[in-house]
Length: 153
Image 1 (cartoon, one colour):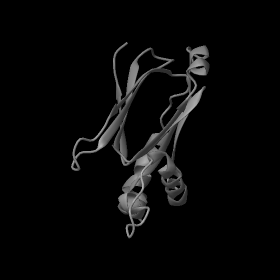
Image 2: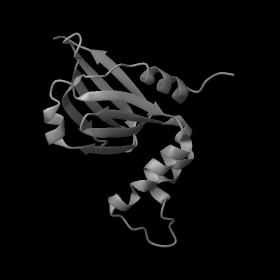
Image 3: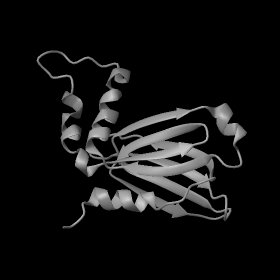
């Protein structure tokens, strides 16, 4: 039985090591048309090599970002605890639906409340829920893929 693409993406991501890496920046590149997708870039400084790492999430559908910058600043030398991914469709659905009250959008009857996300909910098996856990916060991204580029010191 062949593994799905999302399964392979998840497995590759879970093999990455971000422990004790320093967070340099976060950049969100939102979509501007229906044909392109949102990308989220996180730049790190690798604690063991001193080289930079650029982690890019591609085909982003949802983002939840909770950070206490005072706590993060107190851990300036080792800000990242770990990075993991989740492939559980039920947990991804819960993640998406929990965000709906924060969108502050009402849909007129007879449109169902989940009309704008119905298509996404039906295709969650193509997504991965990525989590980057910091000493001071968590970033969660529902996306289709990721890329990692290593740079210079």
